[in-house]
Image 1: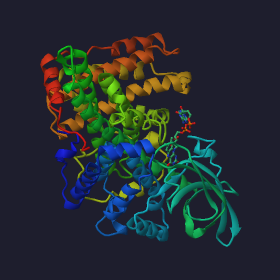
Image 2 (image 1 turned 180 degrees about the horizontal axis):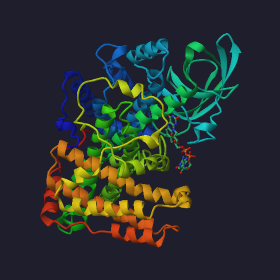
Image 3 (image 1 turned 45 degrees about the vertical axis):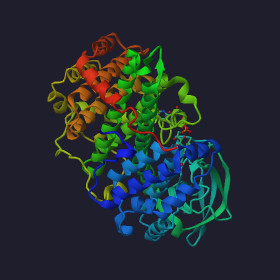
Image 4 (image 1 turned 90 degrees about the vertical axis):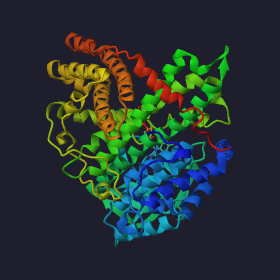
Length: 563
Ligand SMILES: Cc1cc2nc3c(=O)[nH]c(=O)nc-3n(C[C@H](O)[C@H](O)[C@H](O)COP(=O)(O)OP(=O)(O)OC[C@H]3O[C@@H](n4cnc5c(N)ncnc54)[C@H](O)[C@@H]3O)c2cc1C
């Protein structure tokens, strides 16, 4: 069983402390119960009890301190993935305070400022949370236009002025990693601000939720050289490299949300009787469940495999820079599809105030939009298309990376430029080794897409047209998604029926995106002809389908959160 069931925790850990953290967290949420979870959500109660719990159990300190800065701690993506998943399984608000702490810690652990790093490690032990002050009200994704300014006052002193917008935890973080520019020369800078300083104004909570997503302003806020984390190119790189780490977690939040929602949905539908039969007897309901389940299993297989590449990364192997944005844009948008499918099944039940689903239906929408929208990530992914298809390189095979190690490289990822030079292992062998009918259909669709790229190459105008490019990149994204799912299916021993059923929806999705590209105003007759070759029907397999349905149906009554 690849999906989380808190009642039957079975993830492998090679050390007792990691398992202990996951079990204690599950126990805390279950012991507190669903009624309280929902009351707090409706009343938008600040999660002080959760923060007290994490402090008492030293959770963030253990999970978010690199091993060089404390005892018994390490930054270990393998276990952080599951912690992400568990928090979101119980509520996105709990995940968010952890997530923005990760972002806030990024520029700190990447900094050469040892004093601030030791301070952060100490604060983690004291139970503090952290914040990442990047976004500004007027500029959205355009961080080049950052207006937060540091004005030098001589002798290593400065004053900071400006506002930040949408900053989680900024109401309470003693170290807010704040991105700005020097008043003279416009050099980028990251510095640590403290919400308790009288020149720091917490203006308001922008969102109406349990989280505090702050607008804050600095008014002649005093900064010294000792508060500076990075300057110039290093500050810019720290910004993007932090987002590289952080955005990966959004996929895991989607996985946690969808898993809990799936249990609620199957419990409800299987036990509800209409016209003298169970709702799960409707063929269309079964199809929706099979799609939701296979999409969710695929999300998790992909995100786990992306974690392997992230942990294996080095300055010579930067493939994670393709897989990470895909966890961000693909896994999170798949999460929306899963919730849409489940909601169509459970209908009115999804509005009920006592359900987890009510939160899931709202929160799943956030994940594709935060830390770079789907478009921003598609634009990024597009840079890799040529090398991925036409210029593969040899790499040693990356095994499952679950060793209890500190992920040192994440905090020294190096310069962020040169994306177009990154090369990938040949995508074809893993598809060619599979004899499953839908993998074969998918392979043929990919061949048509590759032919389009080589024989009907988008012209200069099409390459400048982001609308056209997004449609093209969706097809590319699906190939990479399928590749890593197939790689990981093997590592996890996924059964053939589920793998083939996953490729059933991948074939349908490829057809959908092929049709979208076909319909773009500038597509040429030759491109349209290749798109038509991409429109394929999945191989039908009633026995395979039945086996997968049996697996989904067996999830009925397997998990329900304690009241
Ligand atoms: C609940 C919440 C919590 C948040 N927490 C934090 C936080 O803790 N710290 C922080 O710094 N920020 C935080 N943010 C900000 C968040 O990261 C931004 O909202 C997000 O990056 C998108 O920016 P925007 O919504 O302003 O969209 P805009 O940048 O205004 O984008 C507008 C449109 O243009 C498109 N677009 C923009 N640039 C490009 C591009 N290069 N290529 C293609 N299309 C593009 C977008 O896709 C979008 O459709 C938070 C936001 C929310 C809502």
